[in-house]
Image (cartoon, rainbow, N blue to C red; front, side, top):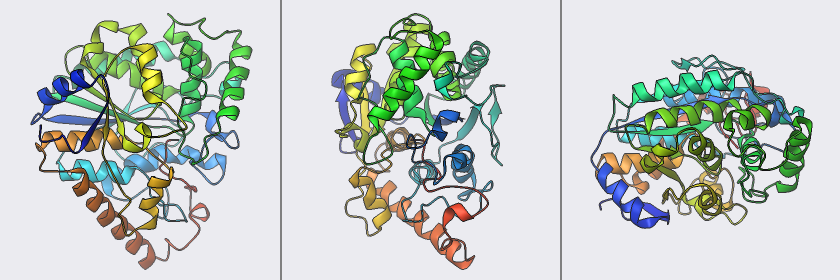
Length: 390
């Protein structure tokens, strides 16, 4: 187990050891599923933008950074004015170090990335307070399943991450609609988790849809349609298709519980091929409970990349240790995949050093272009937390 020091076993430890052992030395493909929801524009819900309207650019900027090491749909760099970097830096560091192929799938975005992506024909999500959050969910799920089955033929296993601002609130909506006791258990990219606001928002959406918690336990399409988001539709369908023949690391935070609930209802037979892969910051977060959520749905293993930025010379990275950001863009799962693929030649410490290298590169470039010192929201687009997926 060359990965022992770099991967924390959070839930179902014996199954995790077996599955990760089988994947060691194997070749993964990383997939990032992107989407937008108007729910992110509710003040106080998401930290992914200085003003709520700027969250439209976050998913596109995230995946552009994976491809190019810079953003194309926005000016500036994917770093906050306070110097706190997007988790896309972690993901990029992992895929570069492990030479990992990656692809982007759109469940429905308002700003299309200036980068290659697969379009599933979905639409951006509406405000879940309407009770009509996502259109065309069944069609998107079907296309995503087909994509997942196809991608599974090209790799030993798949790592699937996400980027959607406001996503933990819509995840809470789907979880409650499907009967999971999730109040006070979803995470946040902010140090102070706005649980009360999230619950009020979801309950308003459920009332508008005429739904009581648990009414849609066996109807994931209706749950996502009413109070979900387009990322959950695309992500869940893709996992359901891919895991029918290959192992899948569901790479993310507590949003993975909502996706897991949908996959269980769609294709329960594939769950033996699923592991949830997150970061140490999510696993140790006292304001959320990923293990408690997952254990209510299905006993899949939960593992976490043992990333630690506490010794970094960069204050923006040390902020992760203070509860800012925590996860996003598949940061934890991509790091674990890099460790597994290289049989431990790439470590979490290597990823940290690469993140610092990328951070210095983009900040120096921004300084030379007189852009990094501008308030990021004064650029073409972006936001206080451009690159965070809540």
